[in-house]
Length: 138
Image (cartoon, rainbow, N blue to C red; front, side, top):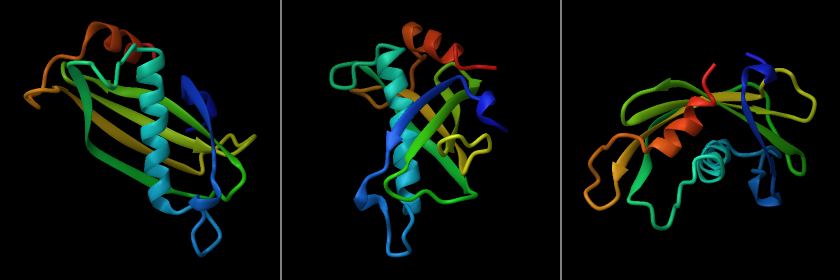
């Protein structure tokens, strides 16, 4: 996979506190970047109201393969695509690139199930969000 395989990008700055004792960004921060690029897209392109929407996405599965590290202060270019879109769930693939990188330094997946906020029961993906997710499919 290369940078060209992803439909949406968000540049995320690294922070001083992201570095661990080994001098590179700690692995748990990568999952935060996954969450950030996905939710930024859902809010901006899908119109998700994270505070008041009756339907929200819950992460039910995720994974990451690490290939090369990041370190403060370099920015992260987070690429996003959708590889499976179901009735109530979506599987995203996220790749993290350095400035000018064609190959990702880390790549993984993130699965959301959309649920009714009050009952926590799965529901169909709202039309506005589904449209935004379809735009990320190959």
